[in-house]
Amino acid sequence: MQNKGGVISAFVNPQNDGTLAFIERACLLYDENGRIDYFGEVPAADRLIGYEILLREKFVTLPGLIDLHTHLPQYEFASQGAEALLPWLNRYTFPQEGRFSDDRVAELQSLNFFQSSLSHGTTTTVAYLSAHSRAADIAFSEASRAGIRAYLGLTLMDRNVPEELLTTAADAERNMMKLIETWHKKGLTEFVVTPRFAISCSGALLDLCGKLSRAYDTFLQTHISENRDEVSETSRLFPEAKSYADVYDQHGCLHAKTLLGHGIHLAEAERRLIRERESVVVHCPVSNNFLGSGILPYQNFRHEKIRLGLGTDVAAGYSLSMLHEAKTMTEMAKLRAHFDGAKCSITVADAVYQATLGNAAALSRAHDLGSFAIGKQADFCVIDDSLCDTLLDEEKNHYSALAERLNRIVYRSHNNMVETTVVAGKTVFAR
Ligand code: GUN
Ligand code: ZN
Image (cartoon, rainbow, N blue to C red; front, side, top):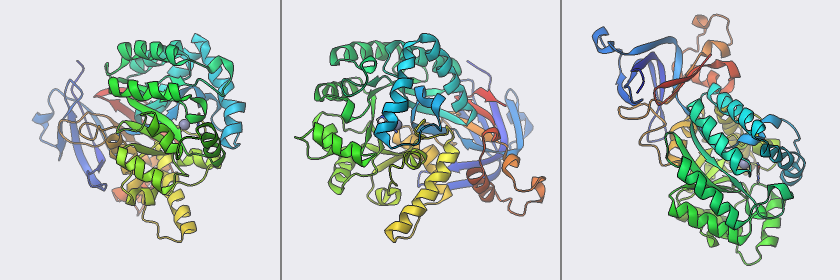
């Protein structure tokens, strides 16, 4: 149990039809269980008795940002080594992830990662961990202590990576079972079955992942069709499969709780299969730019009714900011439309929707996360947008309607603008 609380500020509230409602002044109240029990006009003072009210009249409150794809052990080297995916993995990623055999590294870097995520307004993170089950246990503990909603996975590899990162299907099963028992759907944490990608997984390991994720109702996250060399290597390793998506499908890994990072180079038949299986393609535009992987045709995928998500993919993505990711999503949609000779229909509102309620829907949590409504979880971040104003005194800015303020928040975002982050009614970050 915690204190009842509330905020009075401007609010951006995503709607189920993909639009945003802009409310220039409103009041949000939440109960001692961290659930919203009022959202609307600022009520008379007696309605507020017993609530600890954060008066943030000058600021903008957004639903908590949801990062649907990121890598905890990679944060330390964010912005290093912009090579293509496969050499980048060998040169930077695998050696760094190997360091998580040291419990102290795992502890300090987990703490740092979750605190940094919260300081960027992220209230839910879906992250890959290293290959070490002790480091995974430490990450879950640190997530619980930080108070972030965390979907975390032990990264599984049984071939084509350095010796110290390898597992076997038998060890993977034992280690996952232990983590599922301890952490799955306990408090704010969930376990995610996490085969790294097809290149580093045998068919037997993928079979186990499909089986376990279905048996224990967990999410399954992996990478797909991020880079052309990766796609060719995958077809060489799985000659019997019709396509990259078919590799995962043949091993039972494509279902409605599957989160597929990237998906840039997916062919039409693969997209149809993914749509039929109701799996989610998670767009990671900053990472795609950094490694030169390509540009996801997000707006085409949306027209094709493929379920979509958005993630930072640190450290191929160089920032944990979902606002920065949203900005890049709009820019890359324009660039892609330009090269496709199409009109771009993706807006700031689409990107902010995707980073909040859209990602909640990808987690099948639209009923309790991603927007403000009575009964939903009180997960939100309060933004001091005077810090991204073009004028020193924001009162003077003629572009001060809430939609215009949101444009500045997205395009001129920087790290210090998040004032407060609240998860399930608990203040977990305050500047
Ligand atoms: N594919 C397999 N592993 C990774 C990873 O760690 N990052 C990215 N961006 N792609 C991958
Ligand atoms: Zn990734």
